[in-house]
Image 1: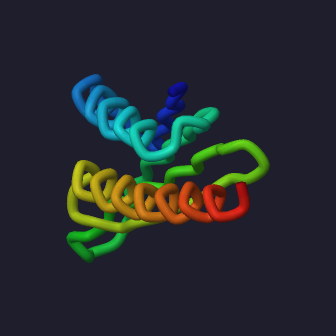
Image 2 (image 1 turned 120 degrees about the vertical axis):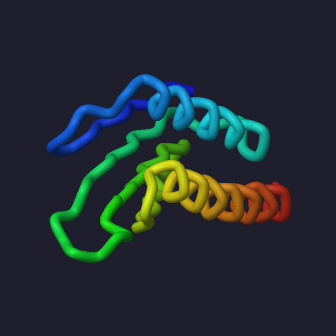
Length: 100
């Protein structure tokens, strides 16, 4: 799967990009027709410790799924986003089986 990682106002290190790619590749186990994913990493200027924002836009045929999470670390955000996308992809696959 093609994963585009964009970090806003900072440079993401290669370890983080590799971590994101590895997590996103696992989504293909749940839904094989994923076209690409855009991952946006942002740091919010607040006094709150949970100031890391991760948005994932997942493109599948006919639709796009958007997930947004805020956490203390980008790794935690990516985990939460991927878990949410897994649930949505499983539901979508089950629905497509019903109508097939």
